[in-house]
Image 1 (cartoon, rainbow, N blue to C red):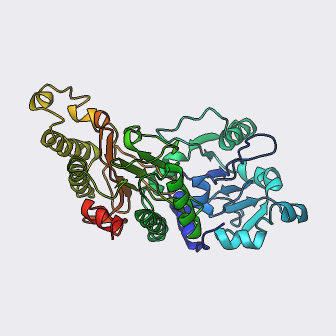
Image 2: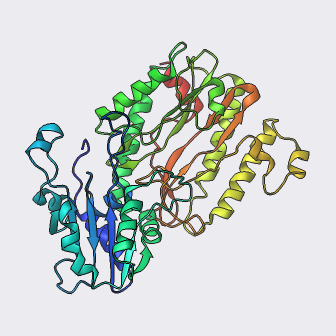
Image 3: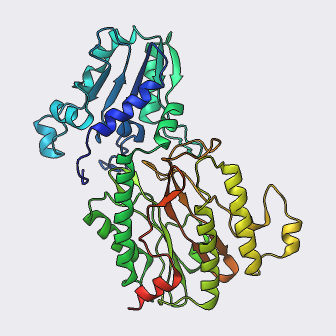
Length: 429
């Protein structure tokens, strides 16, 4: 891995959080992701299961975590199974973790080889009444491919069909949504790397540059700073492309007079950051572009102040909608009668601001958490309002990452330029 080693105390603490919410007499099993194929003998590379990484810190395939707090022998409360390395793997791929290294990474004392799983776990599982199985229960997930988790769960439910099955996902969503100090440090590192990438662009962007050239500048800066790369598919959208919310082709030339919407951010140690900024291609916003930009910035500032412990997303979204409605009225994009006659299920502002304002952030860019519960200290959210005017070939979105504190919020991207005048000054030194 490119990132610096992480103290195993983080993963020990995370497992303890999970164990505290298990039913008595329960065992839990977590499995690593597959290495997904492409064509011929190619693969997409490996991205660890966020839940397994959260609990172990192990960042390689063929890994299984077994947790059984009430096991009778008292020694096998936690067992880690890893891929057995050998000389062939070492030559062709690079050696995998040995048992001592896996222990150092995870803090788990009992480490066995992956192929020993059935033999080792079988007698322990027969002591358990409940079996916690994990699965991706993110509300926005849509997966047609059978995942390693789903395949593994089917095998376990067939072998141990008399056990009472419990879902790990509700526990994981609860504990992962509250970030520890160590996790916040990792997210901050991802944000700091993102800042370096963004600042690199301020002297690079000019008329005639191609969107993919901007992408190349970013990936250079990210990987130079020990990131694996982008935390998500980068959006580098000039002109009308900025009005396509998930534009990822990044294949157009940037023209003078256009604004580039950059939704681009680095990951670090599997933790995501999520940034959006808008840059004028020629270094100067037009009067209209700056009006829209500053309107979005005012909504951004107002929305960020609403990230407070105890606030609900229902109240939050309603308040942000009111802020945006006022700005759209001032810009002449909405009329008073539009608001008066709006459909409450799809308010008038949605014509120009059709997506959500905030989402959880962590090991996944759209991290897990419960939107129907009040905000709590330790949660990390994005704030990302936008205005998209297709008839003007103009899309403006601004986004930073915020930590909810005991009484307020902390902007983890406060050092990344966001004022229109500051951006113009940095692009025209």
